[in-house]
Length: 134
Image 1 (cartoon, rainbow, N blue to C red):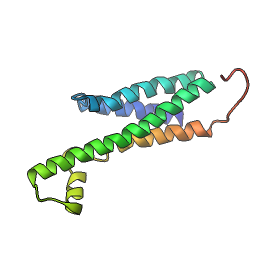
Image 2: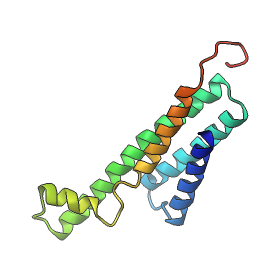
Image 3: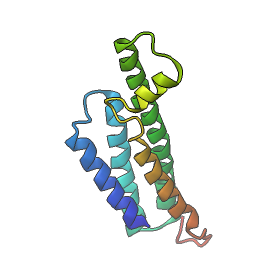
Image 4: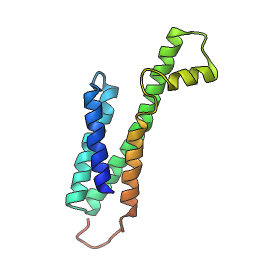
């Protein structure tokens, strides 16, 4: 399962870099989160201690939060764009137009899903109390 997290991180990093997802601070949020998550994931893989697992769990929680925030940013940007083109657009037609907008509204959900996969991995690990797992 941890291997899937690594592959997902590398895939999302590559995708965002290929899309030049670096134009504003908001676009750097997933890149920074993925970089931190990659380091935390490698740390758990190499040295699975309580400390590295806590860092990994925190990084995966950040993935979920950043993914949800990204869905909001993408959707809000598409709503703004749709209303600029048609100021009378409201309700369900506006929502539909925003979901189908130029910026993929649900794409950041992939980051949230990856975070959930990582959290499942972390929560499936047995908790130990011995001194080697601080």
